[in-house]
Length: 205
Image (tube, rainbow, N blue to C red; front, side, top):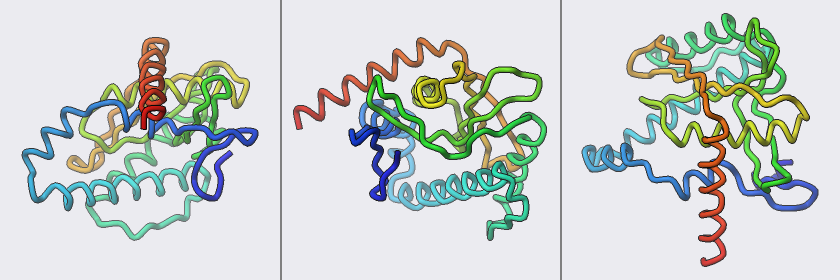
């Protein structure tokens, strides 16, 4: 589904990525305000945040796959965050079906890669989990997980999945905020709107 150039294709047809759609069309007022406040330091802070987020994703993906021997060379202040994520997996997940595996919607011609597809303890329906290292839950997260949910149904032929955003704080190491998202239809309507805007902009470029 994903080619060597990191683009998505389905039966030879190009698919737009979920994150590209959202990143190209949805404003982030909090980010814009942050850029104004930080000024010249913005690039350095953003690079560190990106490195932190990437490291957390790599570590938790490996752990979810069963590679419990992984020992990444992480700064000490980041290790507590990764360990908190590992503990969350142990406590709340009963089964892991897929880790960072692409899902695609043939109906809407988009694709994306959820962080984890599995099942929570005591639940019968699957769940989609996305690790976030942001300071809050944003509408973009809701739209992203709604898009993944639709694509997962089409890809796996399974029941619609529960959507969970698990936020892992760098500033308060060891703190985990799990958001079980409601209103999937409303959130998918938002993504569909953004997808339409994206395609209109692409046609005009």
